[in-house]
Length: 397
Image 1: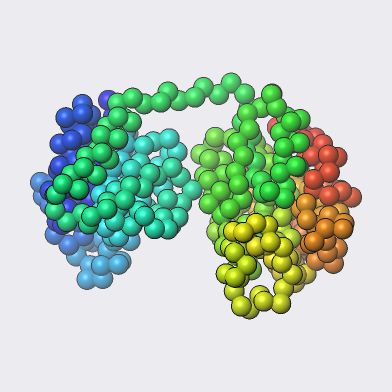
Image 2 (image 1 turned 135 degrees about the vertical axis):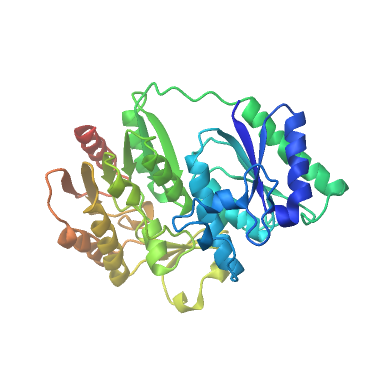
């Protein structure tokens, strides 16, 4: 049986971490206590902080003995990530702690494969945990009380977490056997018609994995692509770039498309929903955008129409990344609108703004044998556009 790695700062959470290890052992799994203390390492841990710190690219001196705690925590997170990635016996990871240890452990957890059990008991788990979870499957459990001594509440919460990871490692879900080619998609409500039609045409010969283009959705899509999970991708909805460049709430990172730059995954892409920037309820839209054109998608989502100069920047960002892709590429431009509400007669119909997007991509496109730019006099949700995307996908897979 693979081991459960129990990780925390033993100098302040030693009793709690050892309690978790005891619970795991009683449940029939094998715990390994890893100390990631940056101030007073525990020499009695199964894996000492010195051992972990030695995996930092600059050695343990870059982690231990620093006077700046923030820098030490960040460095320990980097070291722990490399330590865990070097191990072959990790069956699950359980972290316990406050803000510092949550940052250290989740930094490493995010680098581990999707499907490997990861549970983080944290004092921060009842708030916004997007920065800790990122694009992967970390389970955040609220500690309720501070992890500062064992009491009736902490014993129950930590014990439940320990039993959960023991159960996960003892009863592993068999790895699914791939029986069909796998295809990853990006989708938004305003491109759903397009993606559903593409899926209809490719299934049941392929297995579909659809990701909501919400920032973390795109990151999850690329994390799986980078791990070799997909046989090809149809990245129809690249709207996260608009939020990243203009200031919306669902942005990608600077590394959007990076998975396809580093790995030769067959890639079909488009500019779905690049006509909009996402905000929350209407009253939360930043004041500098007060005079812009909006569409209230629902009570929780307000969409702002992109302007020509913004679309030019979006197109330039996308084409610069697509030009660097390592594998075969087909990129489709829907000249009659990039979303359901960008079609003629709809709220965001703006041919001038769309033209700025398309021109930026045309002007920046670098011709290459494996890359082809395809322009279609269609809206992105027209059935003929989906048919063209399917044809392009079959050409390169």
